[in-house]
Image (cartoon, rainbow, N blue to C red):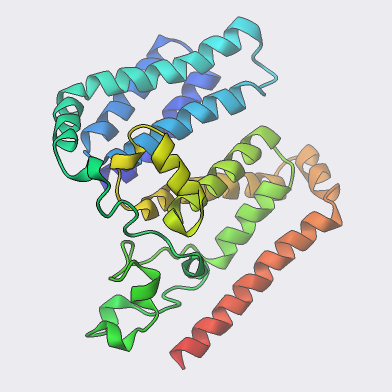
Amino acid sequence: SWSVAAMPWVFWAADRVMVVGGTRTVAALAGVFGLQALAGEPVTMTATGATVVAYAVWVGARQESSFGPRRAWRTGGVAAGVALGLAVAAIQLMPLAAAVRDSWRPLGISKDFWSLHPLAIGELLSPHLFGDYFEVNSFTQLPWMAPLNSGRDPFFYSIYLGPALVSVAVFGALAGWRRAWSGFWATAGALALLLAFGPHTPVYPFVRDHVPLVGSFRYPVKYLLVLSIALSALVAAGWDALAGDERRVAAVRRFHWARMSAVALAIAIAAVAYGLAGACVY
């Protein structure tokens, strides 16, 4: 939980490096990321570090206010901050790496255990769509739960975000306001969701087999944490597009009907999910 709580602070510190610059902001990023690393959760730490560096490259390359060496320095400053944070936490990370090397994890045992089943994403919109684990005495009362959670109880007991939040996030992704920001987070969220699916798609097995270190990680469903951060950022973009200045209002007015249809479709899916939830309860 400490590692998860540190995620938004790492992105805040990286954004300060991009906007303000200077060695102090790099040091702040190193400190925050080092604290997250010391929390001892390697999947969240690695996902955060990779995402924040990708954010610096993606958004930094598209910032109109930063050109040439200045832009390269600030983008490199984020990578340097992450690297320094790892160095700060090396006193714990090095023994951890040795323990992982000598454990059963490199053998790939249960390597895809606790993956998110594609059907389970309905619970993003409807809470406990397939049943509440804490309200039953055995799995026989919840025939959907075990097949959708690798044969046991869910890793996250709730992944509910709500149709209102998801709808505003979809609006933020499609509104065209702050394209670099919304484009990055929409892409990051989609990739995180694909990784969370684990072996249910060919994406995660390919990454696991070809990217060093990922093969020693467990529980692909943890990548939903990056999805939650992405949706939070897209909600901010959607809110800015809805309630901003004249330029933002003009951007909303230029919305294509196809994009508006996508938002309407998301709301319709949410309504259907609530209907299914009611049917399951009945």
